Image (cartoon, rainbow, N blue to C red; front, side, top):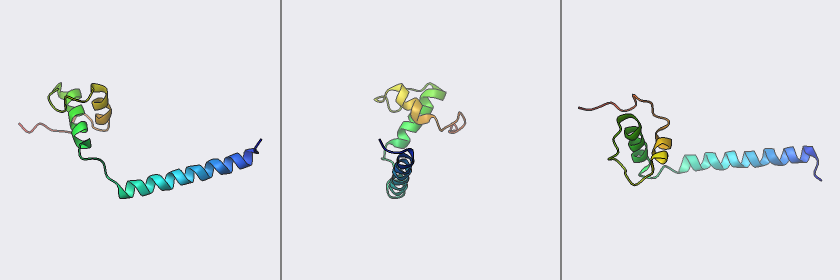
Length: 78
């Protein structure tokens, strides 16, 4: 049975490796080309009841993609 100190050291090392890998991935990669489309489609679905944009994705996915955007995030252009 490993000691609690050894377990804590292992967990801290694993978290450090995870943080370093995550940081390096965020610095060298970008979202795919269709991620903004999901966010806009979710916003339109949620706030404008417009289901035309991106109909192939399920509503829950679009709601999840639009969470960071508030009701005034997009302004009507007309």
